Length: 554
Ligand code: SF4
Ligand code: SF4
Image (cartoon, rainbow, N blue to C red; front, side, top):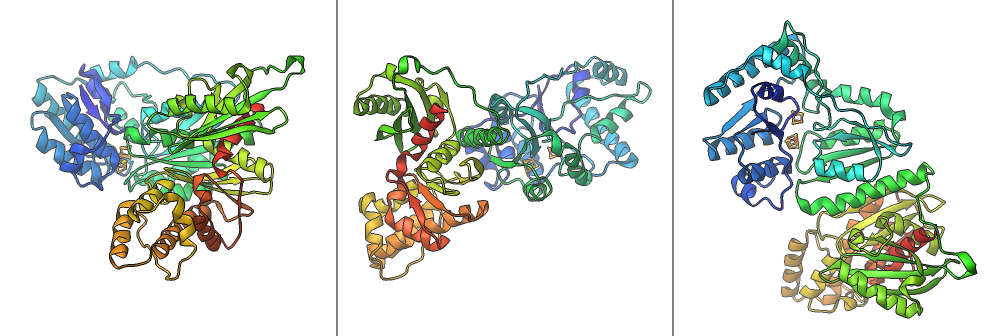
């Protein structure tokens, strides 16, 4: 089997030769091999391809002169797999008569090399027959719902399936892995017309005709409810197009960045689902709920459960939207087990049995691992709903959780209209504070109160948890007071939160949710940054679970 990466690869030629081809769609756990053989700052896709090729038995790999990362990948593959057919095909950046001829020549050179490598023989007539017999994929009709378009860098099948599972209709997928291969060729000039069709596909960002991409969008704006724009970590080709598209396009846009590792799947799912949920709200499509058990005039109870990385929180509401009971437990190693624990404890507090609960909605990172939940909703939507319940004047929510922080913007009806998440590392999260408290050898609960007594204004310049920890260790060595260091740590958290807040616009009233909202030092530092007050609910940790319970009542 021949592996390939680019839509300009003439895979139909290999098909005509009877050779199976596969677009490389890596889904790797880490970059152990790639970080040894390549510079760590290479785009994640190329590193993942290297991991994939190392783990599988390809006969050969066809790369194109897409970008510097791919050229470097070619060098490494060529050196490490001398027995495989590793080929770098030069794809012209311009599309005109001359470049079509040139590309045809390059393709023929590749074919000749492959013929020498295998002893097979290419025949133009066989290519014609192969193209003629290619099956056209029928377009699936979807019921009236949310319509999205996909743009940006190559999107893996895994992320594409994740988007499809939300039930949206994908009206177009203009990423370089999204277009179907349907080529009409002239039987008298097979290779010539095939090459021309290959080069005239919807241009990717690397082609000189990339400006046409926005013209295409102009006509499609009214066809979709929103755009999902995908970039790959360390890809230089696509990162800047997003800013341009955002200015040009007047519908909601979600930007997601993946690194082709399994680890980013949970975060991407939350972003995509929250985006689809916000489009659903703005399109006034109601969610399907099971029929409620309210016959006989009995009280009805619903349960919201928020399974986060640090704590699992639960809230029981009655039909009057009154909180009957709530609880907070540590999540521990298995989110399913902590969910079972909290189910029992919160039912006990409410003096209810499992069968008294009409509907259970789960939210948070572990929301899909709770088998007894009837449905799950993202923490973005749940925090929005919970915050609106606590204070309907709130327009901007800052939620600092154990492993991510997010800012959610609400409209006057309490609906999510925008959100941003910082989930790439522990910087600016509860985990960062835990690490810093450990370094200062104090309990996390002391960090906030002691920081309020600061005297010397210390600035922690690094937000990376690892570097910040070294900085704190140096400050301890310099005999700096713990209260001053703690104040510096909180200022660093506030600076990170402020940059997120600015991305959705600084519209008051502001609210802070999540366990970190119980830290008075962080609250004060954020208030100083935004020059406004933060509304803090009596139990800021349960706002997400409260929102989930409110969804269960809808
Ligand atoms: S960006 Fe263009 S040249 Fe690069 S892999 Fe995608 S389609 Fe091919
Ligand atoms: S994701 Fe970007 S940098 Fe990586 S191979 Fe594709 S175009 Fe090149």
